[in-house]
Image (cartoon, rainbow, N blue to C red; front, side, top):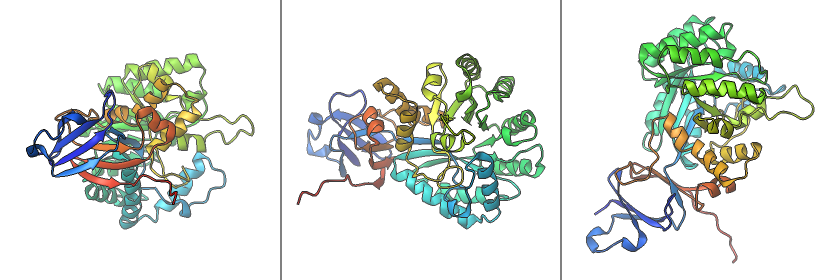
Length: 413
């Protein structure tokens, strides 16, 4: 007897609706609906009717900042550019307490869960402004919500390392106390190349992956990609490095962009595009034909690079809006990138599922024996999910239901 049956489910690459039987935390069987209940011994303890809706393994947020989310009311936005966002956030950080960060992070985590996200990577700043308060708060939130979502913590140096030795020591402390990986921001350091080397030094010392905020402007010159690739290969870190933003690529001529992409492919580096932030902060010095300031992830995917999409920030000076919906982020990205073909849209869906899960070392196949982590979407397939900004109706992690959203209906009477 199974613990749970999700009936009338629509899976990718399955022509007919299926019933998914779950025993404990794993999928026990997947059968066509006509094969269910051959005898009473097979009746499950609980039944969830998917009503013909699309079932996938859930979404993965590959780049988000939980520690500085929901501080819009503490920031003043006048210029709307990156320097102002960094400065305003730095001011706000001085007042962060552990309880404050925990409360705000919890709010965003709950947003994400209700939107169908089952895993995320959060950058957490450890510097003289926050010391370990934000890190300890995110660790606490990670434990609280482990029943519904897997959270990776990236100990992160936002404001430089070569000029901030205390930050370097705090990164080491965070890595010794449970951070999953380490990250840096070379373009905010006086010595970007040395910054990259120092982050890799920590990664090697603690045997963790690295994730950089990189090339966040529209000047096609002075990219940090060559240095990053050099260090990745020299240290045998292929497949263990990821980068976010990299908006310089969007400003490069195609030949130069192809050259940079070849380097990323050679080092097996994942690239995450952050549509909301990249478009909000870039191009502020233009008064006509304002550039999108966003990399075309589909183009890079076709060149053999693993690409993902993510939210980055929620309700702060970097991104003064957001609801932690990766479907909404993917829909916006597809609009801006002017995508129309089903294959292109399917690739976008993979950027918030399969590709992002690969980065976070998570499984997305819905097969017998796999973890019973599933999300029901109000759509018939992946493409319709992105095109219609489909709502997540319900979610399960390891066989236990984690959220529910009733489908909206028209009230004729």
